[in-house]
Length: 168
Image (cartoon, rainbow, N blue to C red):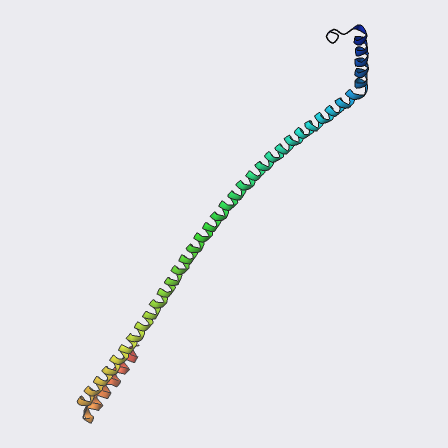
């Protein structure tokens, strides 16, 4: 029964050893342990703080990335609009140039047709004049086969010419 109920001497020495051990731990062990716990606590707090900062940076980077994507989309849309506008303008310019070319070709063709028409009319008039002179010559030869008739005709023509000049 000695183990269950210790005597007073054993109890005394147990209290003295416990006190000595407690004093040594309190003087040398607890400061080291508390210092290590505080260092560990500071390291954990620093790691949590760094993690929050990194998380905030990541959130900022995500927001910046999203803004960059939005800006890129807007710029892409603007470039596409400008390309469509340029394409439309080029098509309109080409159509206008084609209309102008067609109008010019039509005007040139009309001018050429008019010139050809005038040339044809001159040729026809020339032919009519040659034919008229030829017919008149043949008629006059027949009618003026005698010298007397020729003289009368010449006199008549001279008188008409003099009268025409006198009237002018």
